[in-house]
Image 1: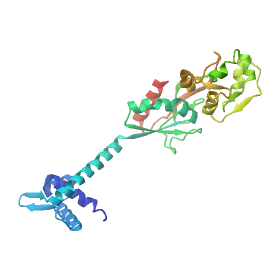
Image 2 (image 1 turned 180 degrees about the vertical axis):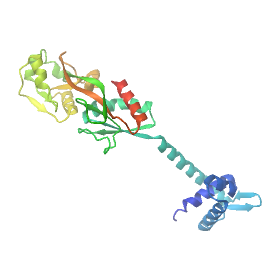
Image 3 (image 1 turned 45 degrees about the vertical axis):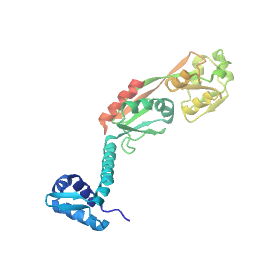
Image 4 (image 1 turned 90 degrees about the vertical axis):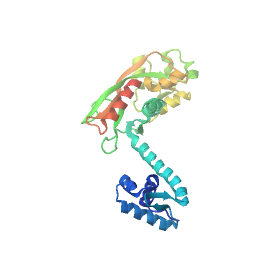
Length: 282
């Protein structure tokens, strides 16, 4: 059996609560005659009488009571679902895959706990997102500002590159010269030659290249070599002991991470909340 018309169900549900066609009509914004007609049509469709028409109002029949209770619950569930949907405010955050996996995702639970009404959509890709065509509200990017016309860039944290490796591999690294005998895990930033030059170490021919920093970090955790990574991106691995810093030296590069937003964001309140949270985490 196909479902009865929604308008008829709504008219019957309201009339069943008020036991009055006039009050039901006022609630749903139609005429009293329209409510009465909808209910009569519903009774004809179902083949049962739902109301006893009394001189001063209505009374649900036994069939009407059995039908009204679950129908009222169904309309309440629909209303609650609509309210929940209205309360969820989407915010799209654009980041690189490495930043997402190594810095953002481990911390994102804190944001959702603090702001349950904001639905974060993480857009993780290497290329700089277009705020208009891609529907992005706020982004985190590494590089040199400005990032484009009409965009505002605010420093999130500076870039400090450190050599990292597994604890087992670190046992064979006693001096920076030992790097010359190791496999160096290189990402697209290609900063190993500069790091080795500053450490006074001869260049090594054993290099493994990765398209993303996160892959080089994962390879270091697996003991495949020594990676050069931004310190904030490996803070969790260093804290857990999965990675160690065999050398105290670091390399400062002019490639900081920045919070990037349109000068006139579409959702300024949501953008401000995410911006403040990112800064607090840094």
